[in-house]
Image 1: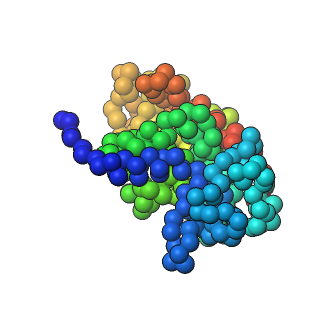
Image 2: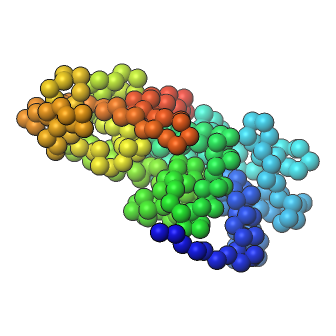
Image 3: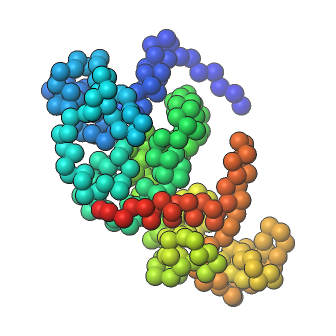
Length: 295
């Protein structure tokens, strides 16, 4: 069923401006000025960072290392950068978000896992794929379409389920918090059904070394319906959901023989031919996590 959506010229201008300003988003504040609501200096009044610039001149450029620069090519003033020195291993764009959420008391390991997922999904917001498709998907979502969006590539309905405003998915702190909430929910459920926290997945050795965490990462991509016990089948190499009678390929599932710390390996065929395997996905995220040796 098709829908006709009417947009005024003003609506289109607002959408385009939001897309173009994705990396650096400013919002008017009660003081009559503007506050950065995205990027590494979230929450800081623009005038404090760029006192000599008018609101039209605030920098939106990034240098070759993905660090913000002024319009004349000079570096951004070093205000507030000292607190980031202890987390230099965290991708620059996400340092403020990571610092803030860690300060709130969020679990560091799960926070790094959420960040590792963002690295897998959009290369921390720097991949060409994200730069080109991100604005289109954002526009599609604003027009009522259904698509995974933002740095962590989360669907709007999922964000609503975990209490995150959809627009927050376009900010570093909102996307990191959303990914964290999903991972934590998945992780807690997996531990409750018997997945170990101090043992690796039984059939996969290139993950995090934590079976529950491996499966939490996998189900971020697969969906919550895969958070379930797995049982042995007539093929010793393949397990199936204990809730089913047989696998999709017709193998009988032995409901009384529970598999321990099993990580299924599904392949998702995508429209752009960039297929994803569960084991490959977990391996990439685990590799990202292992780089976060600070903080």
